[in-house]
Amino acid sequence: MWFATVLSGATACGGKSASSQTPLPAPTAPLPTAGIASARVPVLPLTLIAAEDSLGWQTVLGSREAALAAADSVLGTLIRTRSPEVNWVLPEELRREARRSPTFAANPDQMGTALLRAEKLEMVPDPLRAELRTLVALAGARYALVPAALVFRRTAGSTGGMATAELTIVLVDARLGRIGWRTVARGDGGDPWSALTRAVKALTPGLP
Image (cartoon, rainbow, N blue to C red; front, side, top):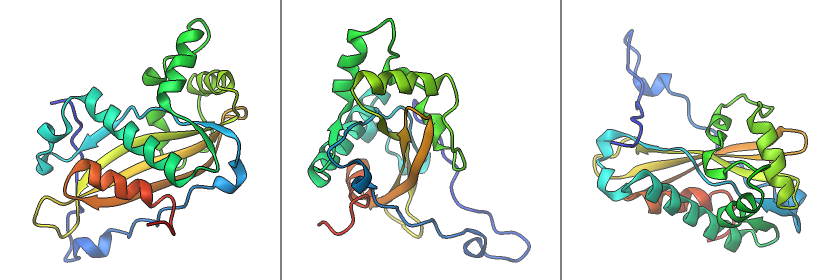
């Protein structure tokens, strides 16, 4: 079993209900495209995907490699369609750039981008900071959009197969190593890719 098990729900104790102890999630912050319009912005490949065992999505997700590739495809397709004002450089192009300079550039699929899911992290730690700076510079860019983690949790109150996709995503100034924007995009669906599609669409509100 390749995927990580994610613990869900809060346990009621001391006579208080779980709902009273579980804070509501913050709303999804829209992509800050005004500040990066017309710029080349690499989109790093996802490296961490996890699902609660209770969803029974092992077969649906398939192998880790297949699931990551499918998630990258959903994100890349929607972000280009819904935010065309930015010149997005998708993971496959980044991989080509890295292969052209193997001495200098890290493999984007093997970088520690998942650590950027930490909620209070403001600066990218080394060696990831140096790897990002080099890779983004090779792409002729300064900023990078990094999907740090994708987690599927059973939708609260659902008795069926509905789940919530939680996509943690950050925008990094690769020159400074600073995280300038962060959000967790959420979307519900009866399968992983419907849920992820709704989560990514939440990044660009106002569109159907």
